[in-house]
Amino acid sequence: MGHYLSNIKANPHLNVFLEVYEAEALARAAEVDRKIAAGTQGRLAGMVVGIKDVISHRDHHLQAGSRILEGFVAQFDATAVQRLLAEDAIIIGRQNCDEFAMGSSNENSAYGPVRNAADPTRVPGGSSGGSAVAVQADLCLASLGSDTGGSVRQPASFCGVVGLKPTYSRISRWGLIAYASSFDTIGIISRSVADAALLLEVIAGPDEFDSTVSQRPVPPYSRQLQLDQKPRIAYITETVESTGLHEEVRESVLRNISRLKETGHQVEAVEFPLLAYVLPTYYILITAEASSNLARYDGVRYGYRHPGHDSLEGMYKKTRSEAFGEEVQRRILLGTFVLSADYYDAYYTKAQQVRRLIKERTDELFADYDFLILPTAPTTAFKLGENTDDPLKMYLADIYSVQANVAGIPAISIPAGTDRNGLPIGLQIMAKRFDEARMLAFAQYLMALNA
Ligand code: GLN
Image (cartoon, rainbow, N blue to C red; front, top):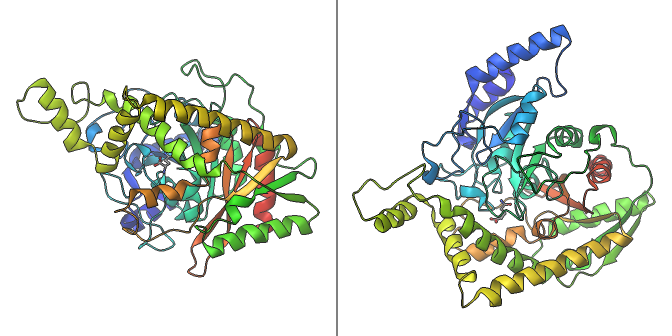
């Protein structure tokens, strides 16, 4: 515990934690020590975990990286948090992130950007940037983040750590601030696949507070990390041949493909022409869902309220203009547009149809293959400020990660070397729905091949 607390104090410039629960964490550590001495400890005894500022922890501030939730205190524990605590994990603090989890670089936080510990002039990725750097810089053992379009995997890849996004509905969303509800998942960032497996095993599964959560029993992932047979693997031609892909990221993927072949695996190229439509589909649907989910922040019920005495409508407008950042406002406007009566069919309905196609075609690939491997992101960590004046360029950071969210399948990013500047490169594995156990086993195998 002292180790993490002193690392946190030594690294304030990384801007990872919005709040550190020092006294509370120390008290809990002492309590867990007593349980260990008595032999009554839970499965996560002493695991020090940080949580992204979109996950509710009772009696603690919760702000989604936004001014609009200024002063807001959570009234209940997210199911995932409650399950961590029940198994004696220690929650060390609340981690910085892009406002409402919208972003790919952590530059959209109202509390300043997070910096990449490999090079503090560079971004950590987003939106769970604080959660990734926390693990990268050894400020905690693991983090809970959220992944709506890549927000756990892309920062994990920029920071050289493991980022797991499970199947949609595997982990209860109770207590996760809603961004785009049909895409949102809680995800795990850790150093090892084994830690991710253990945490998933604890937090996943049925929950009476989330009616969309899967009722399937949760396998003991942490005890199933051995592959039972040689998996069949594919890679998507359009990803490795893309001109937007950095050369060294491409080399890393190709190197992994040849290592797998050398170790006797069948690895085949497949085509996925719909890839070009995945990102636009994602951005139409998530802005629509976000515009609806964020309607509740009106300055009346909680959080920030414009101080002047205006008309009710004026108060709404000023509150939302003053306290939502630029990117969040952009998405509310875009989402309102795609849902507006005149454009609903052209955008929203069309995107729903394309989503279905993408999902069906993705599922078809898993009839022939166990896993798809692809880059997590097209580049390594970019410089702070490099993409901030061009939202489209920023959105391209998600080009390979959003497919898993659009299709609802599990995916994981593992470290796969560094580029010539010493910046981490991530490799992504996608699997069919609810195949986390085998995906984790394969991830562990592949990580060892990359070590
Ligand atoms: N960067 C993507 C976005 O801004 C992903 C965000 C996320 O997964 N929360 O929408």
